[in-house]
Amino acid sequence: MGNKISGVFNSKTDNMAVSTEFQYRYSAMKKLKVSYSVLSKKISGVVIGMECTPQNLRDVGTGYSNVWACLKHSGASGGSSRRYSRAGEGEQARANRTKVDLEFVDESYHGFQTFCDAMSDLKARACAKYCNEIRIKVMKEVSVQLLATEHVLSQGKKTEGCRRRFTKAVRKVSRQESAAAKKGRDLSGSKSYMKAIANRNSRENMYSKELEVFDQLYEEVMVASQEFCSSTTDIFLDCIVGYYREIVTVIDFADTPGSSRFRSHVPDMALHQASGAEFCEKAAGLKCDKKSSPSTEPLNLD
Image (cartoon, rainbow, N blue to C red):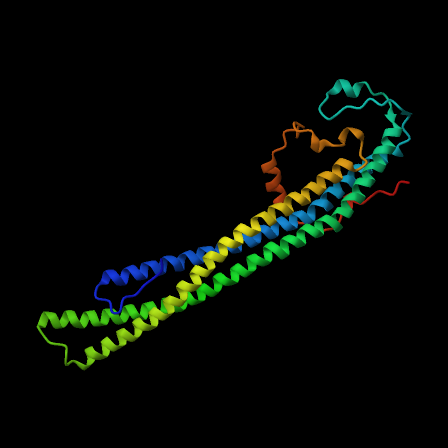
């Protein structure tokens, strides 16, 4: 359904109906533009987070590597007991160890170095691939839709101007007719009335033409928006899943201590009561400078 104007308005109801429909659509287009603007910012934030993730994980891996390096070069008396505990097994498991297992320390040290290298490779390979795909196939399309809404709003502004001028012309004719009716005067010979009628009809014609253009653009943008959402949602989600699946694969197969391998295949693995929502909120406030911080630069102890 679109806005329609009859030849000449004979009632205020017709005028209000057309104006209400147009103003509703004009307002809806403004909201759509805001929605696209917000969507663009949110997707951009996700891409930034994706770019930061490998570097952040590498920094954590470097931190662990530094701790293992300190143990490796600590000069502590060594042993080779292969009894290890997982986090949360309690004080008893820790009490059973009396010596630093230097073989395990060396394995873990080199394992985390491998982990860091793997994260650097992932950043250059998988991260670049999926982030570029989101930029080209999703963010670029958001920009196209945003420009389309701006074009419709520009036409809407033009149409709104015509509507106001037409409404003003209608009211002028109505006032003359009301005044003449009260006095019992015939307006058929009134030049000012004929001029007001001609102006009203001219304004109506201009408004009708601009409204028709607006309605056509409005319908086109709404259809395009539906197609955009239908096509880009799968692309975006597929990129997210593919990217983080690669991260999980790297973590599973990086040469870290055996107890941490294939953790993604353990469905009931405890996350140590970490709140995912809280973690995401905190992470959203971090800025990624794509460089290791000084505290996570590898220590040269060899």
